[in-house]
Length: 95
Image: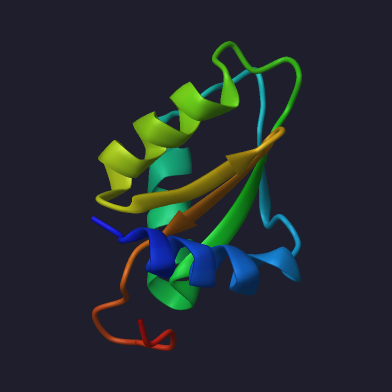
């Protein structure tokens, strides 16, 4: 669980990042969870875009992805989701 100061720091880091993936009408599947988990291991902090044709709201999608990947939701702004998980092998962000 992240504190509000950690969340604010991570939001600042994610501000200049671009979204690396889009979630569409296919929703959250096994392959998407695996891909996002690999991206979190490599980067620790990722930004995703939820397309208009996705079945759930961005907040629901963020919570479902965080639960599936053992990550923390940093924030949801509009249709952008920011997710953080500390890397085991490639630690880059110091909180």
